[in-house]
Image 1 (cartoon, rainbow, N blue to C red):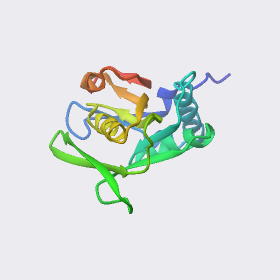
Image 2: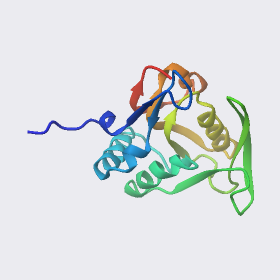
Image 3: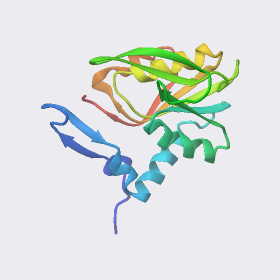
Length: 177
């Protein structure tokens, strides 16, 4: 009798990538397995049990991968949050710091209505910088972030500190970086 696979069993861990001492958690191994993908989406949706929300939003590109099926299954609209210069209509934007440099995220100015309750979705929380930028975008438009959900969390990078005061949940939590 085969034992039931856990979500962690679908994630490949690659040691010393992108640099020595780092264990890279490869989400593409989850996507490449139909059962793993279904489990990932189902487990992320379970994190939303009892959450009252209007909109799902996710950042380019892995936030799209997981956010879209969640929005579809839960019959909610999906709002893409993209890198600067990728959206065709009027946008709002925020800059944020990366480990080496900075980046900018945008969403359409009419994507979130004042008072809407928003769930943010991404594959991974590491330092929390991207997630904090997404929160700032939603709040700039008058929305309220009611939950941040992730497939994986690298606890050693303390991303939750950036998101203090917000509801944060992940399916898998890894100790290290």
